[in-house]
Amino acid sequence: MKSLLEPVKMVGRDVLSTLETVDIQTGERKALAQFDYLIEAPNWTRDGKRLIYNSLGLLYSFDIGTLESTVIDTGYATQCNNDHVLSPDHSLIAVSHHTREDGQSRIYVLPLKGGDPILLTPMAPSYLHGWSPDGSTLAYCAERNGQYDIYTIPVSGGVEMQLTDLPGLDDGPEYSPDGKYIWFNSVRTGLMQVWRMNADGSEQTQMTFDESNNWFPHVSPNGKSVAFLAYRKDDVAPGDHPADKNIEIRLISSDGGESHTLVQLFGGQGTINVNSWSPDSRQLAFVSYQVNN
Image 1 (cartoon, helix red, strand yellow):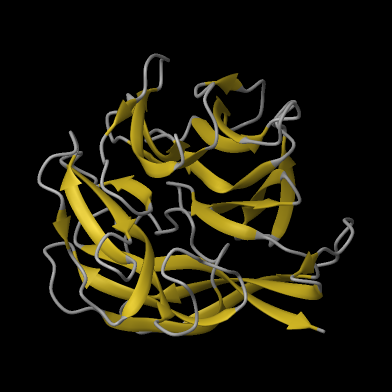
Image 2 (cartoon, helix red, strand yellow):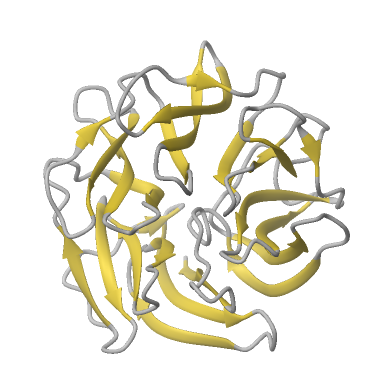
């Protein structure tokens, strides 16, 4: 796909982004489009026809049939990062946008078709990851008093609620389709691992025990599987998730157990930061990268 935007750098290098899908049953990968600049974090729309991704601070809607991208009007929110989530009915999208005043990430909600954003988290930094299936609550990672923990806040606005408080980074909170659980990743045991807790923050339970650093658990729409990103143990610090590493996308049952590798690729940050399951729970969308020195 020809870009009308200027190429960006990944750690000082030119980057080629490939938007891909993978069939979780056959393992077949399909490259949909390539971009000579950085794109990140595809969300799959519930009609199965489009992928929403971010690039250069803006959001785009990618038509899987025509392979064309169109920009989504996000008003003044023009510094969006790779933490964006669709509402359960897909009428709205919540974004993490770096405000002009201080450059910190805050969470906003706007119509998916485009429109004016509404601020939900005056406190910063706040990085969105989950939307409750009843549409009432957002879950996010936020730094407060020097500590990154999991928080929730009503979509209608109000006071945020802190769900985790142990030392170490907690990140990537995402609701299960039944609304009972919030999945997240935590470094509290030394390596970054996948965890699950009740939606009120109780019964925090470790779900992966791999010798790797595991990030961003995403629950399939049918509630049966969880996809996550895995870095090799010695490639990164447990609390880091760079964009330029040899990584894996792995799957685990939502009941727990051993994980297995679905895809090996070069990527990381930006590959699957947000839920990218197809509505039929058969495919995942993701972004892989190539860099030139």
